[in-house]
Image (cartoon, rainbow, N blue to C red; front, side, top):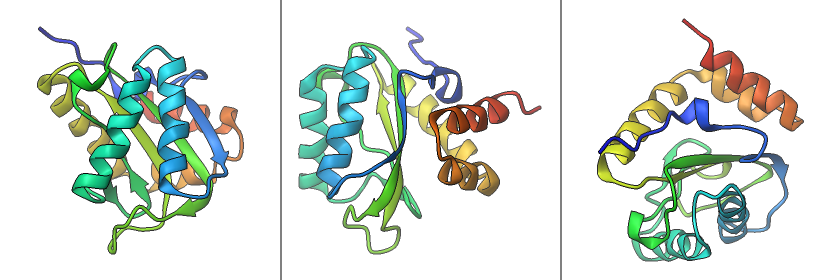
Length: 156
């Protein structure tokens, strides 16, 4: 069963937020989780599972300098495969000596391993583009952020 959905194509006005102020990684994950819940991607249990996973496994989700991608298992409350993205007004530490502080947090909800692997591949490709990442960081409004995403989506 192919339940994948593209990272860039799934980001829209309902599942992105810009320059959010939080005091900790827990608050960042709570905020991200609430966006995912409101977008119909996950249940509340998924947000708790993302936090529990980070507490038990450490900062595995900090995948690049300043970028975290918390996620949990499908059975922890995924409704449908999709993504959310927030930028933080003030970066926070997730506990990664190499990649803290974090100012971009990408939420991944995947219904199965295929969706998970496909999503990781697409996200990795996008994040290798340093100009794209810098434009995400520089976005001061949701409109700016979505224009950056749209621009990347339409690249040939």
